[in-house]
Length: 399
Ligand SMILES: *Cc1c(COP(=O)(O)O)cnc(C)c1O
Image (cartoon, rainbow, N blue to C red):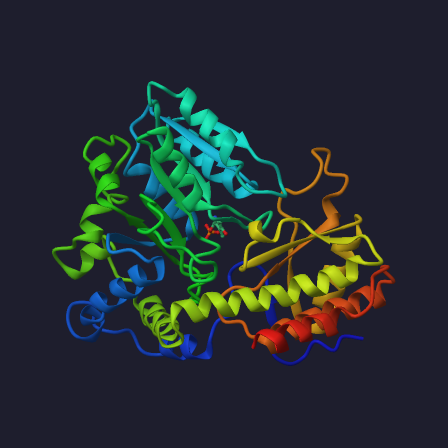
């Protein structure tokens, strides 16, 4: 019997749970797009976006999903025939790389596996070998949403500096900005991309490219840039419509403004800390389950785990069975496996992912964990005891 009626929780790594405040802000008639409130609220939105990315530099806004920001970021820095180095820690690195390749740019992918971060010594080696400085840019994710691996971006900047390599550092922060600590300027990131539907708690449909002056200088010679994807007029618009190169995403802007206000009210440091504590509760629960069952965190090293998404590895097909039971019976939807496991796909049903990004608090996380525990029992999947107590203790200790 399904007990799922009641408020549902989409616990997948994006789109994330939407605050009522955001939804209510969007519930209005179409506003005037030529003058008045909508036009006047743009400087505040731009400032709020830069604050979340911890940058004083530029932001270009796109009506599109994360893939749009991916393509936009590439179009503004590369010319056909350029070379890019991709440091891969999961499927999303590969998807971004596919886009680079499709634009006529030479791609070199170095794969760091599915359960750990970029090895900085190896990255240093690879960059040092490129004495001719052929890599125009180094691309990686802050968090790869497929594996939940988090990379040390500041360390990567230090590697580039130590080797003396001038490549641009381009970071995909789509899953993680507004969840995991990210400091664009302090960490020396040249280009960062994110979307509105994860840490920024707004319905999917807008994305953002942050870029500094060094990246903007690359734009001067980039021959991949086209009118629509050009970040300059969007970052320095000489009219309201130029932010979007056309009609504004009117209602998204109202939602986004509210979401940014919520982040500012809570304080970005507190937002990061809330994500860290809630994630710690999830780790505590999985560790308890794993004490007597084949159910483990995908990333062994806590320092390399995201605070926005957690990937859990089980014996196939238990992860899929568990996910389907949870969805059918509890009103919680968990994330499915994206690209994890062996190449033949035989363990495809051995992974699930928990999205805990944005508008999330202890009762949601504890409810989600309790729903997973119910599924473990109902599906007769062996697991250790005390997971919920461990999670509650972690929250009690860190609240
Ligand atoms: C979600 C996500 C994307 C893709 O975003 P879309 O909005 O689905 O296009 C890219 N990279 C990462 C790390 C993501 O989490």
